[in-house]
Length: 279
Image 1 (cartoon, rainbow, N blue to C red):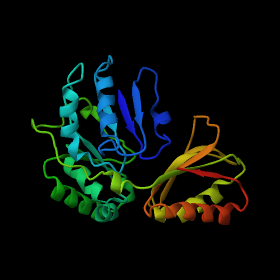
Image 2: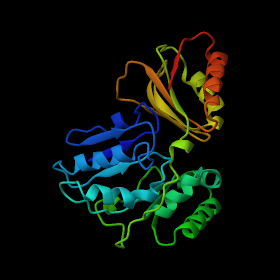
Image 3: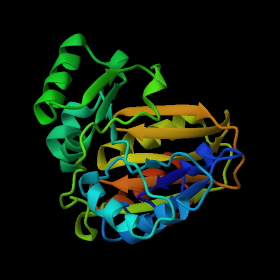
Image 4: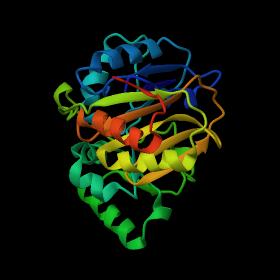
């Protein structure tokens, strides 16, 4: 079973994971560790406990702070048909952006603190000096967690299903995710299919400095793509999924101001091409 968490209203990652024989619950519009979704998260775990499954994997938002997972599991234990055995928390470190993110985003440090296993990915995109610096920071924050490194997640996944949390205690502190600090999210949709990938990349490059994340599905002149923007990196993947409209989701660094930035940049790059923004 999978619980999929998205900060925005529209689910982008859910359709990628859908698979026959897999139970999935999607929770959107906030972090599952925030009071805005914590009850819904607990309810989803209770529902999953009634399914004929062996494991539940929780894919939380990249800005999630899971420090209060112990509190949530304590609440679920009183209602779940079958009790959960907490295997642990896996933290994925983006080697290319980690040092900058650690300095500016509090939840990045909290994720490493909570982790039982830290996976440092994208090591092919950084120097050995930077990798050693990342390792030093990870070990300073969390000296107990197991650490693995990878490129494109080419690793041995034998650890899946094993108990990563070696102690009987589960982290239980107040989460940094609150309704007050939840980043502004909104979406954009458009029908035009003749936009070039070069022009769309230009648009994304201008938006990227003001956003934690931009992602979605687009129908471009060169084909249909799923795309992801983190920091200065933009990745396109041919999409096997068919969708009615091109859909872009923004997680803002600068609050509602990003709406105007997106609108102005779109007009600059694509002139009168119609698009629609929505909360």
